[in-house]
Length: 172
Image (cartoon, rainbow, N blue to C red; front, side, top):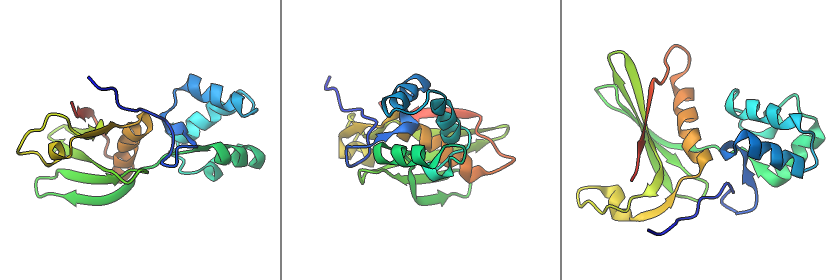
């Protein structure tokens, strides 16, 4: 089977998407920039706990550190290209990716749970005749940051009082 690229860089191919890094990878990256080790923990919290959209939002980081990070990294964020609610309460999101491709996520409510189906790939390799996604073919796997951000964007849409209880991966 062909191995497709999986890379934590932005569409320009130069800056690392920090949202897709593990705590250990983030620490290594921060140290590589000459920043203090504890900045990795602070960044991780800003990205994954506070859903920071930019380094400017990371208020406890010195301005010089925020500027250095912005030169070499991004905090990837999916763009909601379309939101489509249905009569049964299901909500479909079409997200735009940094490279121009689009993916879908679907919120499916049930009596006592709320399931989020998230994409793991752009396109699909199965080729089922009834499926529009399959007609694209498999273009690439999503980056970890793109996968995680589907959850964050859906969670932000829900707001207070509603929470995702199940996550299902779409893709082969």
